[in-house]
Image (cartoon, rainbow, N blue to C red; front, side, top):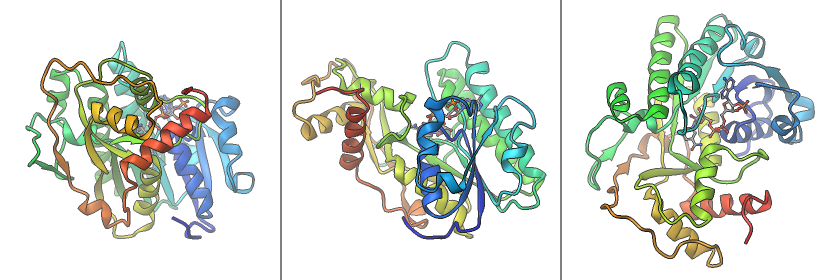
Length: 327
Ligand code: NAP
């Protein structure tokens, strides 16, 4: 993806030091955009140095301090922006207090950000990073013939019932966002990435990459989960295209392949025979079945989808380079 589409345009990326947002900032700078990037602590070199070292950063990257839970926190960062990419949201599943650790920052944070956007005469579009977790969790059976698409919505009551707190946070945040943008006449597009793979730009390990690392470092069991997988570069590109293409609208599911966690280990083993992976997983229940996710709408953005084996290679090489993996 290369063009100068961003020349002279100013956009904001929230949570910019994160896994997905770092790639988004990198690709936006490459396209010529001026990026106002929010972080919680602009003085934390572990969070910002990799951003400050990106091509174009010296000239066109500006860091802003902002916290999801502080009202008005995003005002300075969004001022003068045509596009706002809202990726900041806690992305983890292991929490003690779902309300304060996940739901409040996701929902109140999204509304805080949108309130800042509502005041903006310059704003053309908000692109919100949601998740397939806000699409899939509705209790409808998923079997090989079922094709999930953008008309699917997770149900809060189902998420609560089976304690899918991360999915609940993303579902409630998306729902609150749609209500707010309709009432305030804001143009918004929502991106729903599946489980993200690919190289890490940031030095620390984000939660989803940590789960993949755990799988690759010899866990004897894998979660009995069949999920979608997608490359982080496609996720970042989809955000940018969703902003740039005037006719883009509504929701976009981003899934290259649907595969069980144990298949990820199997493919990694084939790619890297010396990786110390378990030969076989102990699974005492039937594997969660596969399902399909439609790529039709997302392909209209021009996303071709990087294949799973390349995404896996990229994350393995990146984890090796950052010394999280030694083999
Ligand atoms: P990540 O690396 O953990 O990034 C999350 C970002 O949110 C971080 O920059 C974090 O800031 C920021 N954040 C969290 N709480 C905040 C708060 N109270 N105030 C301000 N910023 C806060 O995770 P990621 O994987 O890139 O996730 C980014 C987005 O993609 C999230 O919306 C997530 O739900 C979505 N997503 C991720 C995946 C995946 O597989 N990774 C899949 C689908 C959707 P700090 O750096 O200061 O902590």
